[in-house]
Length: 295
Image (cartoon, rainbow, N blue to C red):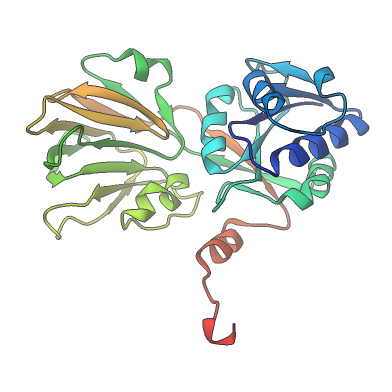
């Protein structure tokens, strides 16, 4: 078994997480590699990890890896997909961040979680992705043209709203007058889309959701659509350009550019341990069913 370890940020729990994970994997006879930039980041900070300089590193993944472990929050997992791409390498997250709908392993449960994976006590959750194509071409987008959470368009360098002409399978839907528009996957429905009033969609649903960002017309509501739909967008506004974001990656497009968004032809595999589920995570994170009067 060959495991990749990836992270983006350093906090007080990072050294403990890395050391616990790395040592446990090695004690089980499993090859472990830390992403090069994450390795450098930890080395710059104060840590007491023994023999840290001997840790193996990687800059890119290949199909010989069996698993990627993300250390951080949900944003770190989103970035981890840039390494996995379409190789089908499963991802699991250790949560050293905040909310954590994707990164669900707590730091004090690392060894138990890894042992469960070694023992095959887990299931695979396949997550749909979005892919985008633009009429003008854009190097920043073309390099990594997919997103696990959402693809959104938004205004740039202005307080004025933008107009987003929206078509579903070549049929006109609406011209959203708003700060932007989010096209979200079920995975992304608990992220940016949720904060803008979008619905929560369970991961296995064959749906996407369109969620306007601060629409001027309050009748513009989130819309759930089949994930077989191809969404076409054109943005107009006072400024000559607008922003497009794919998860945490942002690029600039000229107004009037045709943006084509559809379901990607591959999925990301997430590992779900048997003692947890999406609904359980949802209850915990959103505090459903808790009676504050008893606190």
